Image (cartoon, helix red, strand yellow):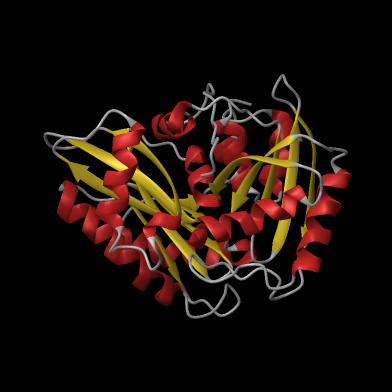
Amino acid sequence: MNSSPAFRKGPSRSALGRRIARWLDASAHPLLACEISSGRVAGARWSRGGALEDFAVELLPPGTVVPSAVEPNIANASAARAAVAGILSRLKTSGQDVALLVPDPVVRVFVQHFDDFPRSASEAIPMLRWKLKKSVPFDVEETLVSYMRQASREAGVDIVTGLARQRIVREYEALVESAEMLPGVVLSSSLAAIALLEDERPTLMVRLSGPALTTAIVREGVLCGYRCTDLPGDIETLSPVVLLEEVYPVAAYYQDTWHEGIQAVRLAGLGDRLEEFIPPMQKELQCPVSSLVHPVEMEGRIRQDARPLVDRGLDGLLGWMMNRGA
């Protein structure tokens, strides 16, 4: 989402994961990733051969990071800088490029249909800014824009566009720069985590991070829908009924648009309460529901040395690992 986003092909990703990996076809491939959320900072370092060498997690004091697409995000800069510096110090890194995964509310994602779309970025980006100027709550001229093409179910082409307010992205970049690292790639956590989905059948990802709920539907290499909203509370107070009320319209939209139902659901961010949400969601959506990073389902899809990331539920870092081909 900055001037040099980068992804690399890997052997065990979904088709959509491979498309995201080619987003803008950039050249940087950081071996280090740092994910910043409202509750924690997590980082991981890989070898050039793709093995996970080390990872670290540090909790943030409440209110340190307040994700928003519009307002300043870093409310306690000293605590945020200390956490990021601590993570990167524990990973024994300095002066390197880092893939920076930011909270989902920072990046607005749209899937739009075009009968015809320019081939050159110099024509495409102004067109996207003009078309989306009424869809974002800030001046589109101060945005960072990334996009990728994907197949459409009708004539023409669908474009997946990510927009973020430049000054907010700079807040996160400044955190890693203060630790003497270079933000070579900026991406929202859920766009990274999409690489974990197996998309041979229509699959719905439901991912929570703090009060933010992100839903995404993938099908045979196509991002069919993406939505990020704020819940009225956090995981401690969330009920299955409230979550279903947020998720069901997304599933219904897919069914009305694509004339088929969701065939699998993958949940993330529910922690120890995961098992409370699976039965009511299976009953309502009439399809299998499981964890996005369930150890059994990830068997054979990731390297054995990456299992610690699975055990800690670090789906954003796992997704980045798969995006960059580790």
